[in-house]
Image (cartoon, rainbow, N blue to C red; front, side):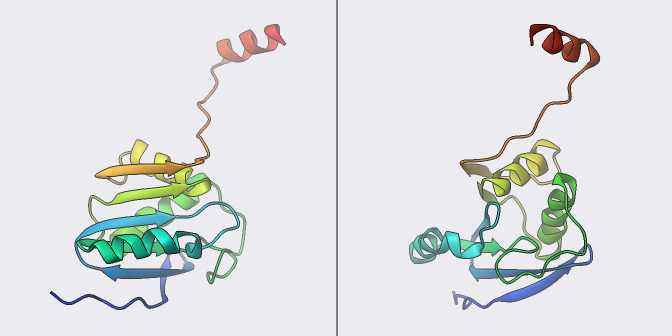
Length: 146
């Protein structure tokens, strides 16, 4: 079994150019960084799983981070979620173990929670959350307590 070398690669997903790395073979690990960070934040974790063997380690630079260019307009959670779903389809990533930090965790929760990606496991570090939609009744109750 031969191992792939780590290369910086680019993919165009939903009109956005994204930098990523893809190394190894086996169970896919998808590593998603937080706000203002880059795929470099995962270097030690990627090296650990590469040395361990049996894993395909994929790290992504979100648009405007690391070596991915800025998007033409601001992105919201749905944009990031659809980007990662499209990215997984582009690379044929199935049933990954997803690591998410901050916004990467929020994107993970969104994609898995909406069943757009089926993940074997999710690992979250300081993950941002997803606000539940507030009903009118709940909004009135919150307002009356304030």
